[in-house]
Image 1: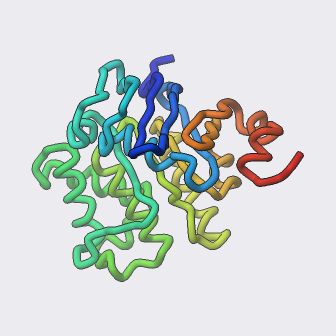
Image 2: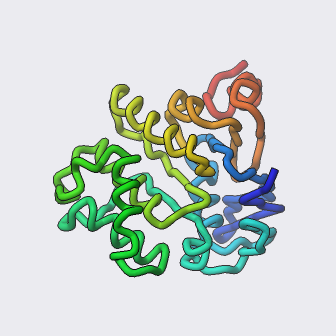
Length: 240
């Protein structure tokens, strides 16, 4: 199976604090990988290393067979890395469609007119088509989360990174968002998803990776990982 992303011995420190410690894993094309761990485990830093916002102190990052360890963030976007952020920050004075058009234009490097059909399809896939002309600042939290997802998709990603996108939603809203993400994954989108809402994560992903103090302490099928004594003690705070 073709690997879309591979990390080998990736480490990152800020001063004396090592936030990513010799991390190695790979993600096959078309798979969904979940990442869990307690606050401060290094999850968001790992995303910043994958996207090129941070440069590692050691190790190698390979994207679709190409070494991108020192490649800038914009280059990785153009190669097919899309990302949503934990706190949605759309252009609130612009419409939902305009937000997508900006993402498509900068992410794909093409004129707005060339991306109209793709943006319309993404709005439909993310259940925002009926909100296309709504100002982003007027959206509910669920629709803001959907817009964050849609903006990431508008860049044309081969690899989609989701950062706690289910946080703050009601159970009903969470289930609606899960259905949207499942639909995108079913279309072949490769996903890496950081999430604290475990039932949302395990409804989509095929594998779970567990981080603690920047180290990988588990990687495997969700049932196997959540049955691990070490994972339950560290992540759930339960003495087994």
